[in-house]
Length: 131
Length: 182
Image 1: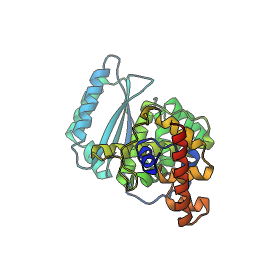
Image 2: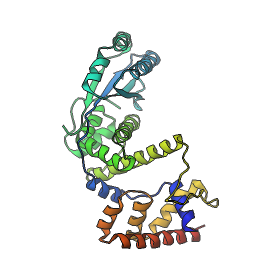
Image 3: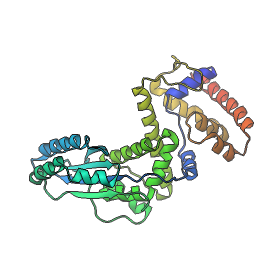
Image 4: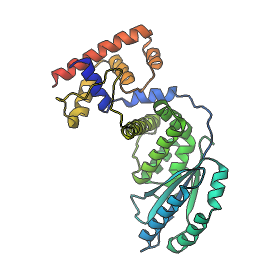
């Protein structure tokens, strides 16, 4: 095998890198100051029989929030252990954009829809780094 | 994954909670290690917003598939490995979306035809395992971009000229091993 062939192979393959090499790189990584964003992890558990309607409502909510200036995107994840539970990870550029999100029409609409579909109140965790 | 309201205190408790699928564990992990996770992803994706995307994507995957980590002493190795692979996947997706052909250095070459992609990974792993510690580090730096050239030089205690000389030898050695294994 020529070195050019090796280079092409290594570029297209998953190069096996040892965990200890990455741990060394981890220790060498400098943490720099950066803009603080708002990250929220919301847990929602559907009432029995309302799972599909809740999922549909959550997806519509995500689509609507994607149009908000300052929204950096949201993703929805279903619990592997409990199919009635969904997690929503929402990101916003600033506290102000998060406040606009909370005050929006689509947020109020979702609040009223979800109230009929949930087995318990939503739980929201604010994910912050290094606090 | 189950919600939980109390933050696990030790790294072992945190990893146990993460493996049990507790949402609070995600929040605690991000608080304790999020800065370094994002900075570490930034080494590879070279963009702070993209680095955050990589880490948030990883948290999302952990919500759906809680990771099982038994040894808290290896938490840094676990986080480094997870973030590294998430960053490599992100780079691959970006390149694919831009329609870029994978390339190495300045030599654009298609992958060799005689190599079956399915067993490429195991063959590479087997060949790399036969290399010396120093050769592996050079190749992990050059091909895997795990360390910067400067960090690798520092780890090996060698000059830039020696780095390039030894890298050439390590590449040749790996090519030989893969040729024999063909």
